[in-house]
Image (cartoon, rainbow, N blue to C red; front, side, top):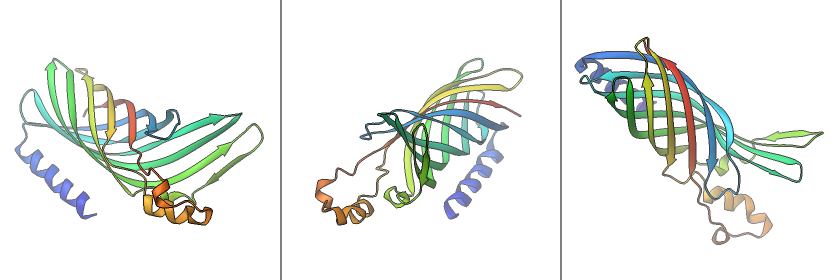
Length: 205
């Protein structure tokens, strides 16, 4: 909560010094995966709000807060397994307008794990469990890079990729869970990072 409060205060400070402010609700589609997972991209949704703070005519700062469905999926021998990691993401983007409504943006993103579940399903049954939730760290840090377009009416489109920079796996908790099977921590690579391709639409007020 302290981190979120500081971000809100920073947001207010930006708004006071800004030339113009836009409130932007957004919704979009995720294609998420994790490195070293041997899985494929899992579709999901992201939804949230951002605030575009125009510092000059062509440069803006855009903080936001989004609920994002991430993870990966594996399909083998008729069985589909999905890791469903949901995050509350807080990006702080630097945005430059390069031609009319066309813009490029990049910036850091703080992620806080909300839930973690594994779902397995075949043609007859489906099972979901959260017993492995503590295998994944509660905090994630990533870099957001993308491009977008804002029409004169306020309709927005954006495409970005979130590059995970921190290990999402908690090696200590995994090793503790696996110790009963005779697998030591030294036998585990214990490194995986999020990667998320996002397509969003929104409206600028």
